[in-house]
Image (tube, helix red, strand yellow):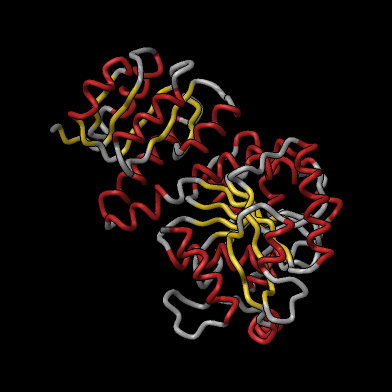
Length: 379
């Protein structure tokens, strides 16, 4: 069996020639045309696959590669922008999507990073970093204020970083008032708005220059400008472009969304791989959820296999039990976070996070529930 780090799958056209010339001296690679895929793939053993655009067959080829090459990451290259194809490929399991030649240097850099990590990481860490992360966007949303959405989204992102080797980014899209920085104990003069001047040609380097690091977990953050007037500069096109670059640079992107439904919130919800709807266990919350579900349907936001419910402040004092809740709401429950007034409120008042370090022994009930959820999700 031929040993090669990189497998390039594509027809021998201009795109193929450009990439093979670019990578000829940088990577150990072999090329394979799609018509020979079923007969020749078994003779290869790549660490990474670069799939080149072939009109009408991209999703089918990706599915076959994933079936035959278990746990091998697949990166896609195209000659032009196709946001619908990009979304379909990423949801089908592709790690990233590059437009050539404008993203040529970015592609080369990303391949170098991924091959280096795949060579040095233990098998379990490879799966956590690529198969289970691979540019996934998790959107936290609620139609009702006071559900604990921002606290849960920040704790979720930090726990993801503590419990895996993944590259994690937290984005606060509560553009008018913010909030995420308070729960994470971070102060910075840089905000997501600093990316606006370069959004049309934004690269990973621009993104990392603006992102702030949470000091304990080292996850990266894009903080809200906390300014209603400045927030108007952030458009739905900005959100689409931002998430596209984020998928390239990070394994997990956690987005905290505001309650109000506008073009930016809609765009983020459509782009997300999974929507976590946070709610309390009472009658008003169920009523708001029903209104939200109806709005999602009117706007064409897909929820099947994408939307899951997170029950917050679960305890004996709740008006409704989980069984009562499930009678009214048909979506799966992703997690239950216990009511933990003492532990949570103390951390908030001190400007501290719920977690302080990996493998922490003394965790509050809410932090334990969050860890249980994240670990089960990563399996």
